[in-house]
Picture: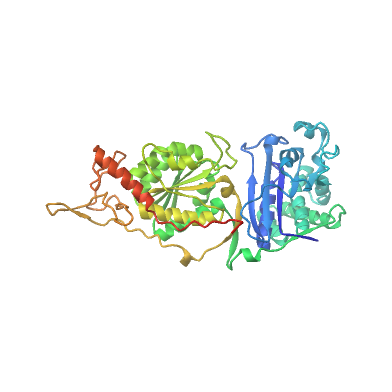
Length: 512
C-alpha cells in the first residue's frame, strides 16, 4: 500500500459506457470517506454521437486529496479508457509515468481505424512511458455474470461497474454505498441490480487477486479541511438552486424563474421546478427574451425574480437587463457561462461572458456582478446576489460557469439561523409632500443610504406610478428628455452601484 496526498483520476469512454455514473459513484464514496474533492464531468454536445468516435467520448475527472483543494486538476494520474477513442482523446493530457487502464476487448482493428490508429497503441511501444494495465473488461464482466439470465449485450453494460470495483480496490474506497445505490436504482429490476453488484464485486476481486496490480493506494481523509458539521456532495447548479430557494424564504417573497432551456443552465430550471412546496414558480418561456420579460414582470409584482441562461442568451436578454436598470427593480440574471462566440461550445466550460456581463448593454447601465469561486460557494453567491438585488433595487449578474455548474465538492449544510435576513419592506403609502401640502407617492425618491427607490406593489391604493424604459424624471418618475436630468440619473444609478456594501475579498494564495 502506497500512501499519497492526492490523486487525479479520469474515467473515459463512449457516451453510452456509463462514465458519468461511474464517476458519480466513485465521487460519492470518496466524499463519504472524508477526502476533499473536486470533479469535472465532460460530455459531448451531441445527444448521441456515433459510437467509437472522438466526438463521442464522455469523461469524468475526479481530484481527491487529504488537504483542501480547489480545482479538478489538469493532468490525470490515472486514465481508465474504455475504448480506442477514449485513449486517443485523453492521452495528450497524461504526464509520463501515469497509469492507464484500458479495456483491451474494444481494441479491434475496426475500432482503432475509426480513430486513426494504424497499429495497436497497446503493442507498438507508443505507451512505453506509462504504466499500462491491459484488462479485458468486457470479457471479465460477461464471465462474472454468466450465471445470470442476461444476454451478452445486457451483461456487457455492467463493465463500467467492473471498472468501478477495480478502482475502488486500488484506492481503498468504501463499497457499501455503491451496492446500496444499485439496489435502489434498479429496485424494479432486481436481476439487473444483482448483476451490477456482481460485476462491481468482480472488479474489486480482480484487483485483489491479479498480479498486474501489485500496488494499491491510500489517500487519508482531509480532516483539517472541514470544520465540524453535516456535509453532502453538491454540484454548483444544485447549490445555486438551493441558494435561490433559501433567499426566497429569507426574504419572505415568492420565487419566480422565467427561463428558456440552455446548456449548462437548464439544471437550475429542472431543480427549481421540483420545489413548488416552497412557493417556487417556474416558467419555461418560448425564448430567452420572453423568459427575462416574464421575470422582470414578476419583480414588478413583488416576487424574487430570476432568469437563467448562458452566453448566447445573455446577448438576447441585454435590452431587458437595461430595462431593469432603468426601472430599478431587483432581478437576478444567472449566467452559467460556456464557450463562445455565438453558439460556441455548448457543453464545454469557458469564462467567456465577463465583459458582456459588465458592459453588454446600450447606454450607461451599470450592473453588479457576483461570481462564485467553487461549486459549494454557488449557494452563498445566490444569497449574496439576492441581498444586493433586493436592498439596492437593481438587476444583479450571478456569473457561474459550466465547470462550477457540473462539478461537485463537499458542502457543509448550513443551519437556518446562519442565513442572512433578507426581509424587504414594500412601499405602503405616500412618501413625498408637494409645495401645496399634498401627500403623494414618488417612485424615484431614494433611500439616502442605499439610493434605492421604493418598491411599490401594483394594486396598492394611492401608489399608482408610471413605469417603462424611457428616461425618468428624478423623484416623480415622469418621462423626461431633459439633458440635465438624464445626466443626474446616469450618475445616480452609477453611485448606487458604487455604494453597494460588500465584504472584503478573501485572497487564497499559495505564498500566504
